[in-house]
Amino acid sequence: MERCKLGAFVTNLGKFNEGEIIGEWVNFPIKQEDFQKVLEKIGINVNYEEWFFSDYDTNLSGISDVLGEHANVDELNYLAARLQEMDSYDYEKFYAIVEDEMDLPQNGVPGLINLTFNMDKYDLFSTVFDEEDYGRYLIQESGRFDRWKIEDLLDYIDYEAYGRDTSINEAGCFTERGYVVDNQMHWYEEYDGTLESIPEEYHLSGAKESLIDAERDSVQKSKLKVLVVEPDKEPYVKFIEPGYRALQEEVDGTIQCTYPFADLVGIICNDDGKWMGMPLNRALRDDEGKVYDIVAGTFVIAGLTEDDFCSLDDDMIEKYTHMFKYPEMYIQVAGEIKALPVPDRTITNEQLMEYGHNPYGIAPLREKMAHKLLDTGLRVYNLIPGGGAERTQSHEDIVEHAEKGGYFAIEKGQWLMFVEKKTLEKVEELLEDDYNMIDGIINNGDKSKEDRSEKKTSVMEKLQEKKMEASMMEKAAPKQEKTKAIEIE
Image (cartoon, rainbow, N blue to C red; front, side, top):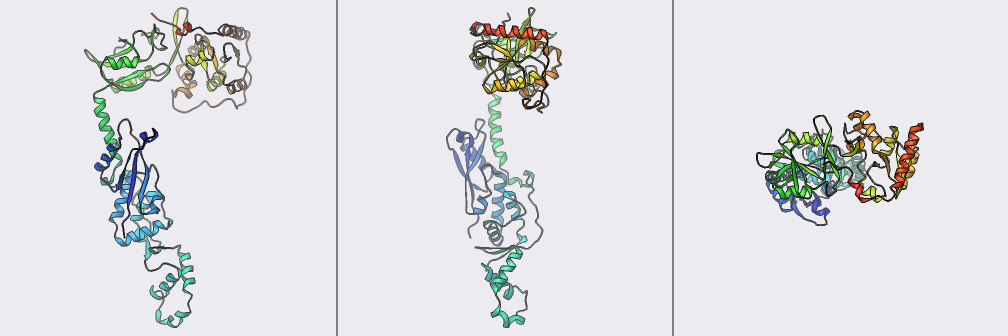
């Protein structure tokens, strides 16, 4: 009989998501170098790294039933190779077992692989196709009975009934290949589901990685590895073309280079960032931690040689990622600039102004952070579209205002006092849900459904509240020039 055919249509996932089907049929088993050529042909590279099986071609429907889009390619290759190595009798048994979906000790492709190692556990009677055939075989041919003793009874035996009862007790199956039964021998788990238990010659999963890694290495060797720091975002690594043009594209204009650190690194920013009104990004501090300048707009950190820029090494990336990890906001107090962590970076200044509020003296919040800051004792305000604000009295107020699509805010001055009273760890823990700053464990759940007691309001707080509300009412029509916030010369 024809041996099992196992093929799959390997499809470029990225192109598929873009509405284009680019793929190639693969017949297993296949060598890794040939599979790598298929991946190259369908465009798997640093830009399109993912692929999946969008279709299968097999003459064994029992196999196709356990396959899916993301079947393990090494397992498929190993299974196809094992089927090719089986002798005809074992393959007949395998076909009968799989096509009639006999229960196996293991499911899926791993179960099919281990089935090829356990063919002695099953018996195939290739001349038996129904209950009567099985009854006649058991009584007349199996040797269970001395034929000469029952010779006179053979014409009176109900072979069908005997075959039916026996097959039920044995849990056997009548198939187009014959009768198959589990003889209760031990099931050996030769394949344990790990890559290590698949012989090296059948490994294919490394083909994609080696292909992409080779291309990535080739591309990255010719590029600069830099750290990009955008306003309201955490820093990220990027590979850019060497030369000033690529740096200008990153900072969106003419570049300026500063060298504020002892390390051989430089900050490349937009030379006209403040004059152009770009959003303030990160503060630069002296040895005492005081802010002496603020970089406006996106900036890049690159390594330095004697006469040019170079890639950052891993140590420098880790150091400056930590240094500039948290987005900042700014306030001027007694002539001194203070830099603060942004309590909620999910609302941009542009969104706040569209809502009718100037971001100069307030930090906008969404519902989640409003609940958390209210629990700390900070004064949280419901922002009114078009201008104005009112003090939030309870978590129920927050829920009600949020259901209307409303924003919230705290005063920057109040936030400054709170931050300066707390340790950095406490502030990070408060903002953990938004910044993942400490341990990746969310300790601050939704407070809106918990029982809470109302906090008493002091006379000074009431006065400050009225002052805040009056101030916001005056800013019902925000002016564009105020969005520049603080400029440091």
